[in-house]
Amino acid sequence: MSESIKRTNEIEEFTNLYLIHPVSSWLVPRFAALRVTPNMVSLSGMLAGFFAGFAYYNYHDSLSAILGFALMLTWHILDGADGQLARLTQTQSEIGKVIDGICDYVVFISVYIALGLTLAPDLGPWIWALVIMAGVSHAIQAGAYETQRQEYDFWGHGKLSARLPEPEELQKGLNGGLFGRIAGKLECGYVKMQYAFSGVETAQRHEIQHLLDKNPEQAGEIRAIYRLVFSRSVKLWSVMCANYRTFAIFIACIIREPVVYFLFEVVILNLVLMILVRKQQKYNRLFLQQLRDLTSE
Image (cartoon, rainbow, N blue to C red; front, side, top):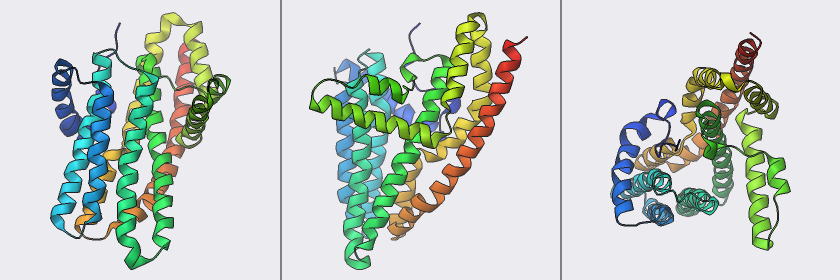
């Protein structure tokens, strides 16, 4: 059975569900009819986000701040469309996933650098330390959130395309030329970061797979229990999604205090991340207990 081209509704974040993705879904069949490729959509979104950086550089002008916000919303819409288009046209590829990920980071890097450049003359070079800390924090938080979504789709719905590889697998697969090895090492490092900061436990994943293999007739029940336990947890993690950063950047710029955004990213969201990891560990224990009870009957 083919996978749905859309993301999983029960864990979808509010603004995606009712604003971003309806527009993305409207665009997807039109892109397909025009033979627009998913990578073209990804790169177009990246270009919109890149120009958002230029707009936010002039954040003191309210119209420029509004333009920056509109361009970032355009990126969100196109970012929601590229994956759907790839699934609709069955053109998913590893290079496509890499391009999509790179485009996402280029958008925020361009905005962060633009704000750093416009703040530095008044605040001094220390602002770059804050910008870099915000960027690193952003990468960790976004990776952790995406991990929760992948795990839910893989274990809760059996979507093979959402399977999170383990670092050991990636390490064994490092080969090819210099570019291939560098890309492989970067992917391996990113996956290690996902495991380290998401509360996802390798031992638990192995136990779930073992029980699925051992009890194939109970696979539906096992996945249903996973969805029941973790759907609320994943929705809590959505506070880490890119949408809220886009809104926070706009609000900080429209009140002419972009430093507030960087402090929000570094201090508040990292505190939230720690709380979410603790909660995730609690949900992990609850799920494993329910899983063991089911399979021991």
